[in-house]
Length: 151
Image 1: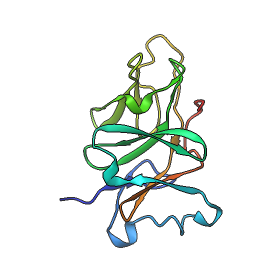
Image 2: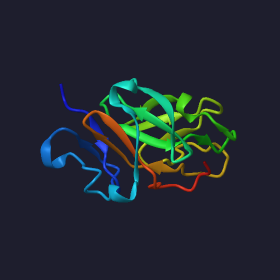
Image 3: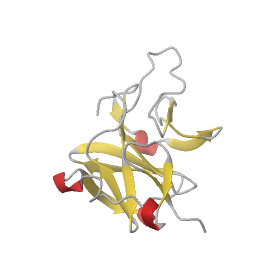
């Protein structure tokens, strides 16, 4: 069994956890200012599903993909105006992990937050958040990484 993968702050590339020096350490990444919030255990997130969490008072949608990579996006769907993205359909387009909005089915890249098919609407980028899995605990950065969407 391969170890779970996470996304390190400032990087969209999955990083394996539990492998010594490649395991991101929130303390070494500036946690002294309280930049990380513990949201759940990795085992609490079912694969290929979403879950909602509050991170510093903001609704965030967490997704654990089939390869155990964890992604965090804003929960707010800018096309329908509701906090519903954690209920979206998780999948892929080629090698790109995606979530489709449960309302109007716009598909978003889980790594970047980019809308892959705005279908006649102004394209948007959802806000993404850094995620670290440390000793089986999912930590989400309180500072957004990408995007301009409202949350």
